[in-house]
Image (cartoon, helix red, strand yellow):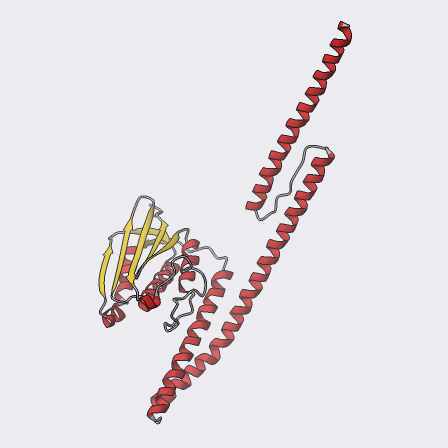
Length: 304
């Protein structure tokens, strides 16, 4: 009886070892699948699942995962192609709009300067001139946005004195700030340098000031400071209840205040977000009643 029992125990031991080996092999293969799928997702689904097991179920699972990865890659490629086609169409339409609108504005200016219109016709002309200017701005914004989204060119970084750049652009805002009788609080730290693209930064700041010009009611505050990790730019202003901005959606394209009486396409802050992210920074907004805040964080690298 002892010999059969030993044989049985040995058989059971070998069987348990085989099952354990297969169990841990399956676990290892599943972990490998999970890591590959995660890497493939981060790499636009360009990494296929590989296997080191010939188990039919594992092979079937690997085949299904690879089919899923191929389908996702095809969807991404199709989306990228359609997006590029759409932006090219928008760019072409915007370009086609700009030429006749520029000509129409020129003729409207000539009529305005002729002085041969009645008071009522002058009023009609002013409305037509305003609407045409808005259409021109809209077509320009669409054209600029399509170029921005299609551009794969990396920012041309150089060492910039952001304190000086911001101060110069603030001086250009004097006319509308003075006309509105705005109270101001400018706290611009001196010697704030960073490695960045001067053209993109100027465009970001101009869009921020344009937004403030549209919606600021009685006061405007601008703060620039530098920390060990980032350059911080904060812009605050009040706004009327009629033009209260939604901070949660403010960076979405075509987002505008509830009132439509303010000019603009609703693309300004969306462009700001795109450009800030291209420079490796972040931008966020806060809204507290009539108080509106925009804060930019840009990388602190100076190359020094």
